[in-house]
Length: 324
Length: 240
Image (cartoon, rainbow over all chains, first blue to last red; front, side, top):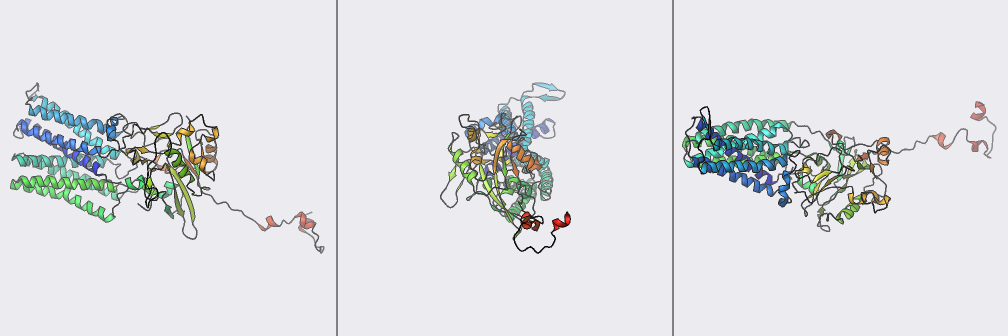
């Protein structure tokens, strides 16, 4: 598949935004349980506003993917059958909940409404739980857009969903650690630890996905594509002189060597490098290193997403032998 | 429910591209707006086509055969491109089974093209919406046309009658009979999309001529020939 930069940015920015919000609310939950010192409302508010701006960035990127962005509102109509439609509904819902969560903290509407045992339930807690559910649902919707297309056998796997979930959460927690480090907040160790755990879990999931795809045998062949059962089949003409949508949309146009380089690059920059950097940042109490850890992982995730698209071979490519 | 479809006979297709050009001509002139045609007279012309003819060589030289393969939307009975559409622009017509795109609703997200294993959909680079074969829906449903013209442009243009058009759900239609009696098959049947369009396979037409076909032993001409008859018995004499 052709890796469209708009979609690469959309999925990585959304992932980091959702992850950062999950990190903020996790921090608040730990503080409520007295595992962590309680932070000022401003900490949660600006953290979730940062998450909101990432979500907005992702939304903006998505419009560049559309041929007719002015009609994008129509995309909410077929939620019964289309994961894309479901994402279009869950994304603004998540953004609204994240914004409301930020606003609650910003305006200090954190007076308890009622108590459940020892737990004082306030508005931020309710919005945080709803926002968490929405963020998780958004991960599933985004990933299912790809995982649900059964013809793209590289994507048609539960591992696609776990990759999106874990990689997005990892980069979000990494950003939360960088954000805390930048503020000089001691939570950098807490967020950093979770970022490392999530990064390692993501490494397992992505690694399993890479292994699975390396051994994948495609269901269709050029024989079944044209219905001629002969082992020696050669395409002589593709039906277009200067290429077509089919030769542009479904091919990455890069060499196998480039693909290997990109894979090696993201395997290095998404997994081991940020882990080392965030550990160093924690040990050295350095905000620069923590920010670098997030930046390196994010750039790695851009490469990871590029590879995710480039790796997928669409069965229609069988009709375009000289390109594939 | 009728299911209109094409049946394409690979045995007689000569790869002349008449179906391609007539399709483009008809569909670029309709009410739905032109099909993009970029650099038509330059080195690398490109554009939107509903139908393309590809060519494959089967076998190894010198035992090769050339197969011309016209390729368009197969109007699947279970079209995977329809449910993925987020706006409902992609739909399958209930009255005749033709899979269509509502160009006014399409947002150009290309998701349907990912969900079609045949690569039958093309995004129009100028109108920025997804386009595909409509089976010339504006011809085949136009009652003001004489009945023989109510067929897709490609079918009318084909000089070898390699393209048949009709209802594959009607067991007595020309297309159903062709599929049944001439080994019609679906493309990539392994995906369970149940394409309505079918292809008729290549087959070799060979004449076997035995010497007896040219000169029969009981050839009446031979008995009556006027050449020198030397008197020996013929096989027929022995048989009687």
